[in-house]
Image 1: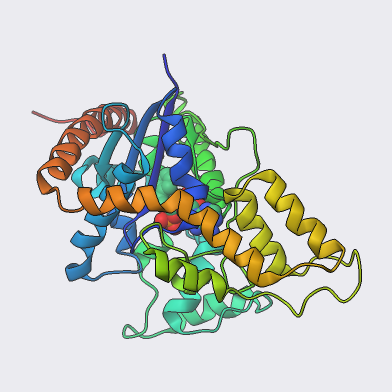
Image 2: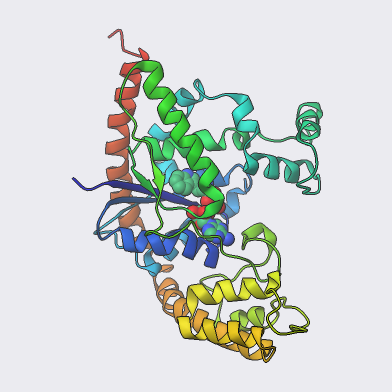
Length: 354
Ligand code: TYM
């Protein structure tokens, strides 16, 4: 039997290169050899993007981007999280086994809670202070409980399909660690062997962290430093040409600065190895010209994104195709989820009197 693979992406806007190299490109490869389910995490999106007008169109965008990137509905199951009501039910049940403290200590919770409270992100700030602020805030300025229990919902997405492998970027590893912990805890509390402990999957490499164009951290929708898969040629070139670099190396073989390393990391993902080598050497011998480097990078990124963008523009307008795909996907995902949920109910003693 093939191993089960589950992964999802939140419907919070178009997909960027981080999503592509951290997740989507792996989905496309994995569908060949695994029993894959890929979904749109629209319930997770509600924790930060509760906009009814945008939600539906965001879900459709990502469905079209999944299909345009090469996920084949004949090979993999594609579905929308909210089409599977078994997920919220198991989320409630699993939450009975999850500690508030362990959820509060999650890095993504602290980060997003700070944002919801309007506290500037500061890694050195002591966490007690944040916890006090969360408890002390009035109901107008609140951290929503859905954000706290986000990892439970994510664990359920994975466990309800009894997944073995979860292709995600580096930023999701802590959530995956919690998923394993919750699976172990459930199995041992009830003395069962129900849930496998899922692991990240990277085709033998380390988990990927795609950097942004602003010289600092990772590429992310909320950081405003993204290259989107559907950016048109002009926009994409402009973004790359404006990427932050440095003043240029002052002496041979000096350590590579963070902004330039970020561009090299993007090149490693999109360009041929000899191109990366060329610019590394050019930095080392101080002959590097950032304008040329950026032109090359934009060219190589466009080679990846242009075919995706073209297919996306077609698929985005094909409502009949999209609805056929998600309907079939929802049926398959629900059937499997219902089976696991029935087992959990039985194990937890929720049985009917009639
Ligand atoms: P999300 O929507 O933030 O991101 C989707 C996927 O893209 C990856 N990613 C990156 N990888 C490398 N570098 C980056 N700069 C970068 N930015 C994003 C993420 O690691 C992720 O794989 N909680 C999840 C969604 C989710 C999920 C799940 C994933 C919900 N349930 C069950 C797997 C299994 C999230 O917010 O991803």
